[in-house]
Length: 290
Image 1 (cartoon, helix red, strand yellow):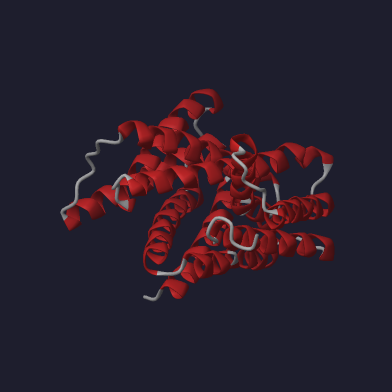
Image 2 (image 1 turned 90 degrees about the vertical axis):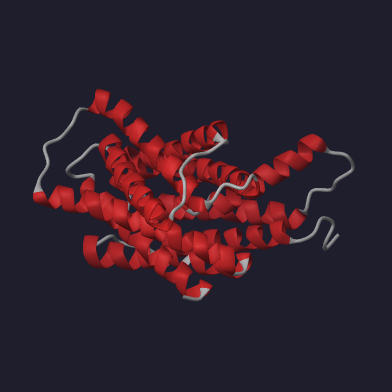
């Protein structure tokens, strides 16, 4: 399957996963969903690794631990945001990770100095991204949803940090299936800790189906996305990845009846444009365009 089709399929599956999580939040606490999502992912990856003759042993346990901690925190906050915000709004806030990565780059340049100039275009992309956040949240979020909105925003920031840690693991020679496996184990561990405080809810046929769908969709989507970035072009992949927001808008409207105002749509468009611009600018050689 070519990279563009892999990205589109993965983006749809992630949007469908978000829908399942939102529906599952009516039956379970966030910690329970995080646990079962990790359980299904770990079992699936372990089975596939065994079939392919791979190994889950690693010499980079500390790196996996840091990546899992950051990623699970991002995941938990995003699941919490999905429970209280419209599907497209929560999904869009999570897609702010590209803008947050640009923020990290700008902060690094400012701290290191060394005669390096800050790219004004990158600053503009970051500002446009945050302007989009204001437009997305203002018409769709009431005062009682402020905590959910902040959770979604922070989840995007942590996702950006986790992505950088995944890159470091890849450079260290860790295969993608092993990274996903230890991330899933981290989700299980965090879920167990969380359930000690939130309790455990009784299962129903609908709840179990939603939990299973969440884990399967997440695992398949992650593998498709990883494969697409391995064989495709980074910028074109990043561009198509934003189709996940479009899929979320459609699923939210058709299944959940989520309203979307013109102001919110304008904010989504701003975030997408800012994310694409930030991705493109970060891919340029140092000093390009100066």
